[in-house]
Amino acid sequence: MEELERKLGVFSATAIVVANMVGTGVFTMSGLLAANLPSPGWVLLCWLFGGLIAIAGALCYAELATRMPEAGGEYVYLKKLYHPALGFLAGWTSLIVGFSAPIAAAAMGFSEYIHAGLDSQLLHLNPTQLVFFSKGIAVVIILLFTSLHYFGLRLGSRVQNVLTVLKILIVAGLASVGLIFGNGSGPKLSLGGETSGVMAIGTAMMLVMFAYSGWNASAYIAGEIRRPKKTIPVSLIGGTSIVIVLYLAINFFILRMVPYSDLKGVIPVVEKAAVQAFGEGMGNVVSLLVGVGLLSCLSAFIMIGPRVYYAMAKDRLFFPFAADVHVRYKVPGKSIIIQATIAVVMVIIGSFEQLIIYIAFALNIFLWLAVVGVFLARKKKVGEESAVKVWGYPFVPLFFLITSLVLMVFNYVNRPMESSAALLTILFGIPCYFLWVRGAAKVRKMETQS
Image 1 (cartoon, rainbow, N blue to C red):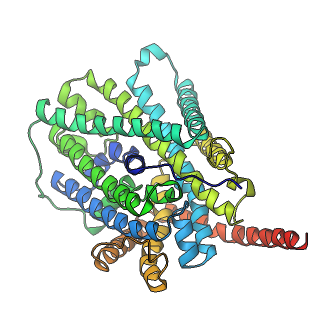
Image 2 (cartoon, rainbow, N blue to C red):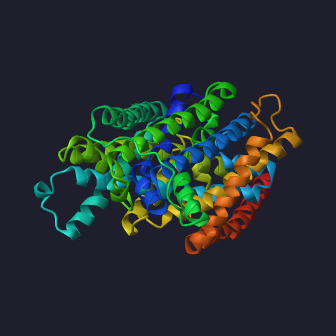
Image 3 (cartoon, rainbow, N blue to C red):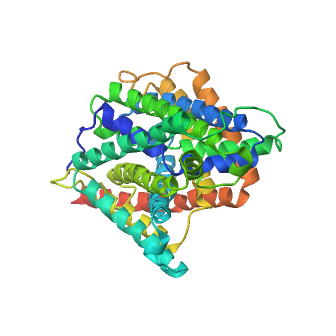
């Protein structure tokens, strides 16, 4: 059987982390944060604190990924450190909500921003036609980027790198140019006002952590990274640090340009800030730029997800053909197609507004278990010779574990329906695991007899 090749260097691996993180969240969340928090200073404080949690997670994953430098992320860590069943459930959850749903959401976000940036009179679309237009564009963009990543890692990673650099320039450019030349009324960083209570801050932090998701991205493709002991920690920590700076800069720009009372509950916050800074004509331009920026996030998800399914199939815990590596292009081609099919179906059948909390809750369970795995890996001395050990041990892992657990509790209390749905999705994977284990046992028995 063909194996994945180690072709990705520091720049590509770091670009994947940045691309996964800078997506829909940073372009939409600040208005929702403002609806829960009393002043701009609280918004920036939440973004900063969320960045610290993400950095702590990245430091822990740097150790896990260098101890086990294989494709698959949490699937590999939980399988080796706990039990194959937990690894399977992590991979199962990734397939359903970890990659396919965000791909669909990013594609739909791209189509919405592109439509907003075009002249509506030019399109002449009624509401029904607009739905078909938006979904059609989303499906086409998924198929286009799936094709790019199907035809080889080198081509896909080059496109990924270009889009990531472009997205960084968009965010950094808007923030810097807006702050220097914009027509804002000055920075507004007060921590005044009274919050609605601890639950309001918890809700705000849940939204922030959704925007920061992706800080572990390069760990999923560790099996294709050159010199993993050096490259993986640099990509995880460096990529996350870049994103923290970008997030703080763009939010400083937004908070300076838009009166706080006008920001509350607004979704297209970057567009609103750009219009305030440069005039009405910039709204359409910014919408188009943000749409292009979302392609980087979509591309990164398409690249990473199939590596999880590939790892599961190699262990005979998924459809066997998902482990097939294309003879010419050296990618898990059939896994890429499976993921694209699910994402396209999700685009067709509905929207993803409620999936934000659903996705965050489901995935955070396995992130939490993986970071606990740092302690288990040291006890079991897994990959001791290749490990880059987490700085500030054990305080950094404990900080991540405590804050993540508190946020999950807030999540469940505030949004019980979505959180319960996430738990049910995970639990549904248990019978699937035993069915695949039984099937794999039968295959091994047949191979032994033959």
